Image (cartoon, rainbow, N blue to C red; front, top):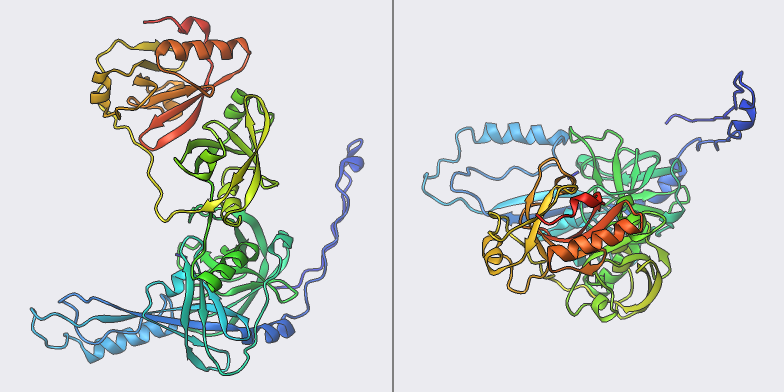
Length: 504
């Protein structure tokens, strides 16, 4: 996928209103931009490399003639070679229609940077993924064959090794956590196959989630990043790598000033393990989690909507051994605050395998701390059981009009109608009003209410009893653990009025 100099002094303008001056923010001073980035760029350019990878791919029988080099879209060379190949082979190569064409060679271009004088290079995994051959071109146009030491597709990182016969210029990782929105940065790379190119900009945002994976925590920058910049470094003004340029947002394919870089503090751990082991050994807790919403927080008595709520515990995993339960809210992991759900996978993944760490949770209305020994994430994780939505079961349902749903005890007929497993526990939802609160929160017929307020339920009467208790506590929301087609999830629903809880 994928400057002018500013000198500013912010002046506080007093409005013609009483007390306006007292409410105005204090004046802010902006530091001068560098007069030039030339000295810094000259120092860094020798450590940034161009990467070319190629692979053989099967060709269809309709392919004709030699393969055109695969320049990045938009490359100034792309149209030239396209026109040249059309002139040379305007009607194909004359081979018989039934003959099988030979495999084609596909090439891709990207960027990387040297982190060790022995020739260790960091780039993106997608730059070299599937390559048969990888070549690295240094700033002095020396081209070397590269060996792949390791790669990680989840973080989109790869580590290469070249033998130059001499020490190579290199750069060091910096502290990405120290970068603030508005700080100056330099991006160096190989856009559109043109070679070493320097662009400047600022940190536009931190902690961006672009829905590329569970570990998204990108630095956003407006430094021009284009196709071919992938794998190249993002530098701070001290010449340290604080990001690895990985993706852009662009409707056209060219830079519109929205680029994304993997923070160096996340990349360093992965790069080290790729060098040592050829793969990144991720820490694993063995839970499914969901975001704590204000409704969920209110139903649990949490002051703020923070943390990651456990919606499933893997059998035999670290969480189960540590006696973590469905409905627990993880507030801190190994001393680090879990302010939102998506930060937990990254924190756990970076925890050393076999280390015992404290996990602070919210359970039964108060804090508790448990010790968890982190395991290595398995290659394949078991998928949660799924329920299939079919016609309502024939047993008599109990409606809860205030929630817009009806429910029934799980019978043999219900298991057959909804294709529920033989060991499924809970209360099956038989009907959902399209405009009711349950439907608005994604509850569907065939879903199973497993717990209410973190207590197991097996009959409609159990559900109504738990709701009655919540109503007596003057809470606005009741929390239900729902087993649906996508697995277990916690669903907060408004507490219905008392008259709605009469059996139908």
